Length: 534
Image 1 (cartoon, one colour):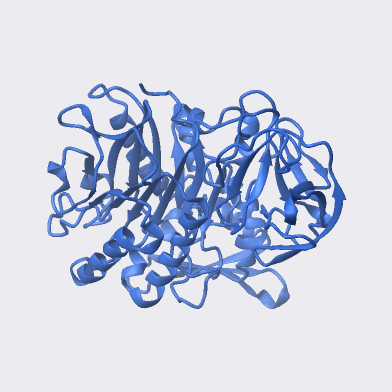
Image 2 (cartoon, helix red, strand yellow):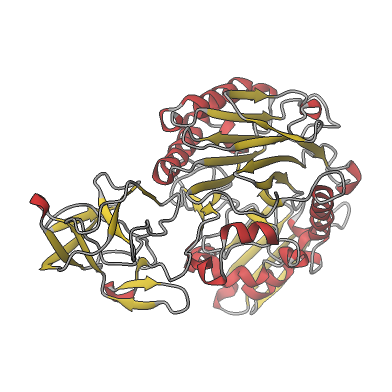
């Protein structure tokens, strides 16, 4: 039944990636992309993994077919994916059909430990068990396990051959039904046109298309379900407002074409300082003199100009953005953090959800800060779009009483977060000492960057996680407390977690996994009530 939580312990990872650039430089960009993607899978080991790709196959699909086949084979059979014994792949490869081609690719991987998972047949209107690995391509319109549509041409008449549209699948996981929608919306065809009005005409086109998709997935044809919509929305910052803010003290020079008198370039110069050029704007040029403004504090100062989603505030929810604009990154494989001077950087790649889907992953407002919403490969070139992904266990959450997470804070102190009142504390942890002895250790976080989540290694005297060293002082802890055993997925040796009783603590699926409980009174002891988040 729609709206019910999935089984506790089910980790779900949703990933969206515009991969058009990967097929233009498969030897460099594709290898970088796969390496970073596999690292995320290895670290979090989701039970259900959904990967939504846009511009699959690149700008020239026919010429890239061999690269496409290799990419798909790698994803299905790579060592990092060997624990996923079931998969569904839907590739829109019908590039000869201008009427239907969307260049979307949807990948779904099911871990071997995942039970009670089924997929909806839209034609038979019933769920079917998922077994084996299957690839569907060419004419997806006849595939009953999905709905696929390309937006009508009159939505975006400026583009004679648009490939924008959406693919929808529906899944049921332990009585929890939810839709996953892969979407690609219209881009800004001209920076000059986008600058003319606020909001821009392109924003209105995207508004219309997204509204169409939302109306389509909640119409009366099927029972309503929670939905996650993730893909390349092409959301842009309000260009007119951004330019006015970045160039407050500048004067504008207009350059026109000699034959048509059409505006072809805008140049913004400082009023003083030798009239230094601050910004040059053309149809496909956005050349601002200081790119750091888009990277400082992850560009959060510019989020006030990210307004397009506000129109759907009652229908779509998004986790807080804490990563830099995801587009347009340089396609030079040696430039992982550099933006191209083609467009104003913006958060184009997003993961959105319905209000009921929000309830599946957030048990209360206090949990919002610990749900991870980030991009992959922040310092690695992965094409012109960074991959965006939230990770969280469906249906998880503390059942009575707070759970805790340690994060590196300012001045080397650890910040412990719990529902209602985050506070800086010194992190006191007990680990299993050699020979079964129990010790309480003080961890010094002075080498951990602020905001970085950390894990622990089972060492005595020192520990190193993610390349950062910790100093440890040892003290005795007694008496033993009720605990259960566990391990973190990106730490090679085990650590031990505690709960208030004999039940496992609320470890976040995707970040940690609870294993067999350890009987009360044994030597494996941990500070009660704590859950470390890596």
